Figure 1: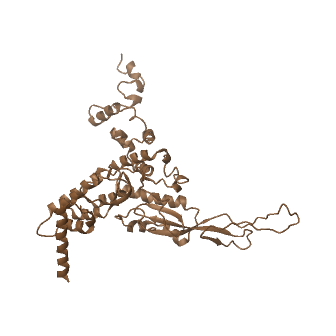
Figure 2 (figure 1 turned 120 degrees about the vertical axis):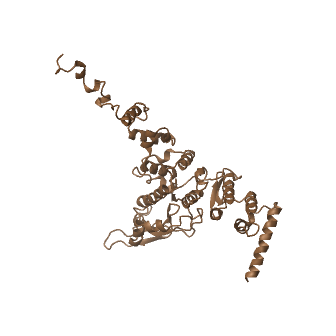
Amino acid sequence: MSRDEVPLEDKRPALMNPSLGGLGMPRPSADSPQQHQQWHHSLRKTPLERLPVELIQKIFFECLEINLPRASLPIALALSNDVIHTWLIRLAFSSNNESARTGFFTKPYLPLDYFSLSASERASLQTEILKCRWCTLPLMRKCQREHVEHVLREKCKDLRISCADRRKLENLKPYWESMDRFDPRPPGSRGSGDLTVEARIFQPPLTQESIQPENNSSASAVIPITPTPAPNATSVSIIPGDSTASTHSASHKIAIWFNSGSVQIRERIPIFQETDVFRLPSCSTREPCRIPDRLLCPPWTPEKLEFLTLLSTEAYIDENERRDRSKAVLRQVIDDGDLETFKYMLGMHIRAKNYGYPFPWPVRQTHYRAAARNADRKNDDPFLRILFTDRKGEVPATDHSIKALMAKYEQREREREIFDA
């Protein structure tokens, strides 16, 4: 064989050449260990990991297995982006109120089927999402803003709103920035809305119908039939020359509560009721989700307390009337001497799984005893002072030592008032 000739085996196509990888891709050389490692890692991928990212995402949304991203790094990378996280929060935490059941969950807003989940499945999904590190307060606040904007866009597009009020609805940024982020009030006690605007729903024009009596052929009188207008309805004149008599509109109010991410479009009625409210985050009254442990432990940063407050009236802390988790959290705060967090928690409302309404953070006998044990005998203990003033009615009647200590504090307060006077 001459020097210029090429061996027959080297004339094989690139796909069959052993010195080349599959599909003609050259194998990494021994001088590049990083490429060598990547090559062998690609050979070890599972069939699921080899799928295109779009298919992995579709499989994830079909099964909604939150633990799937934890299976491997390639799957986690395919499922870790803000769009997917936003869709999951919308799917899990959007309210299932009456007005949301038609014409609200559009494909651009939520490509998934919101109504495919039962109440128990949604509660389980909410619980698992709250455990994830990517479920943060900034992401939840972002979803709140987008949820409110979507409600206004889809449910108010046919409403007649004044120009001044429409400008308010089109620029909600000042309201989001100035809202009370630590508002502990439960639903039903938040007032009639942080922002309320007037709106009108236009109804078909009134018409006149002629009725000809059947038994009196000679009767020629025309009897107009005018429907009874709805309560609070107002008549709006039609442009002169129009053949239509008049157009009626029902007066409504649009109310927004920014901290809770809530919107209500209601008729004007004398008694306000917080019903049919669009809300995010929202949990079922009968089957709420569980607040994760990561939000019930120190360090008590402002962001953690804000997130806990946002969820506290929707998700539950305690399983039953024993109040084990909330009791342990407050006991730890007392032992740590964290007075500011202690005062803040006593002002919060929380939920239990076996009770459908929020209630003040419970105080038990162990909290009075822990505060008394940690108290400085020379000075007034701030923990005991708060317990004996703000939660005086919860002092155990059978604990005579605590009641005697409270009597001593009350006597000291009376002496201080006399001295100050």
